[in-house]
Amino acid sequence: MSHRVQNLEMTTNRTPQTHADRQKRGHRARKQLARSEHGVFAPTRCNEAPLDLLRKSMVGRLPHLVPIKYERMVASPFGFFRGAVPIMAADLAAHPNTGIETQLCGDAHVLNLGAYESPDGALVFDINDFDETIRGPFEYDVKRFGTSLILAGREAGVSRSGRHEAVLHFVERYRRMMRIFASMPVLEVARYQIHRLADVDPMPAILGQAKRSTPHKLMKALTQCGDGATKSADGTKRIFRSEPPLLERVSTKQAAAIVASLEPYARTLQPERRHFLEQYVPLDVAFKVVGTGSVGLRDYVIYCEGSGRADGTDPLFLQIKEETASAYAAALPEGSAHTHQGHRVVDGQRAMQLTSDPFLGYTTIDKRDYLVRQLNDHKASLDLTEMNAASLLGYADVCGELIARGHARAGDPVTIAAYLGTSERFDDAILSFCRSYADKTEKDRVALKRSKEWTALKKAQRND
Image (tube, rainbow, N blue to C red):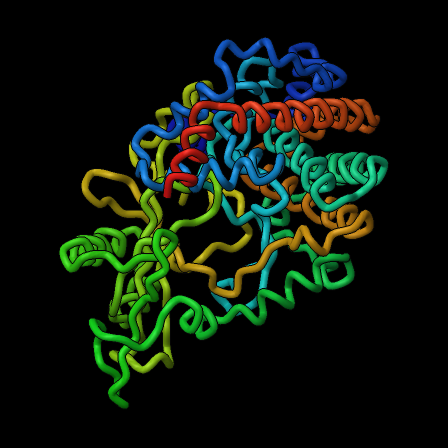
């Protein structure tokens, strides 16, 4: 028996660590970076100018869509923050970190958590955007999400004290939940669910919106009767609407290449889910502009109907979204661990989420990497226009628990909890960082408004 166990340990290539060992690792990390030092942010530590980092991130994007990204970033400081992950990644990399790694969302902010439908039909609320996911220091997600609370709160008109209370509450919930996860059996952490969502403002409104966001409503919003699509039993035809540049049907040749990419994609699914996919027929393909950070990347949507129908009774929308390397890749050891960026996103999402999209997978088109998933199936997120101090606080509470759960599932909660401890040192330091970084974000937005890119864009719009 001992020989067999020894062989097992050798094949896993891991040295077993006791609970005490893991705690000691967390305590040692305080010598690498004291908890109070998280409050230190020095913009000059990063060697590259923010707008230069932004320009580099535009390489390879569709040039005619880049102005849309700039417009969305200039619209507000929070809008800028959403599109400026490369800037924050460089700023974080220029400062010391704990060295305690887990799977990062990478772009943790208030609008990147939301409701969606699970494979069993239940509505769940979780992190739902993983374009920047990568293994890295756990505090990166905490700092980014905390900063988003400050910026979103400013945009919504929440008072300074309300914003600060939300950040402190978010970090405290994260810290307390990590201590709870550190005491749980492994499988209890893996299965952990939050059952109080219906009682926390603004969650009922988000879940209610998700319940109403059905595939049939999406079909009516994105498609119309027209020429070029397969006829249904009653003679009608459905194709994507034409709303350029945000939604445009692609050429026949493009559509054929995109539909052909579903074959290698299907091989990334579990067999039973591949069987379900095979029962859907692709009817039309369009290009769609999404989000802020992703604007300029290639993003396609496929309208499918199940059971050989074409009458709108069994719609499925698949999103095929281009994925490039995580903005953190250059600074983190795992930066080159995945050769396919869609695969990276799938692995990161499955590691952090309790339950994932049943059609989550990846594919390749013209040597570019893509993520594949359902488009907006019962999805909903926070409405900033309806937010006040109480709802910001409630939202911070829920998100602190969810981000802690994601980190605990994919990392070592014992080590993280030991590092964080029971005092408020980490909480106070994170608040200090978030206030400073929110101010820096506002300055970077002003710099973009004064940049040559923005000046040229406004001049071109005037000439049109």
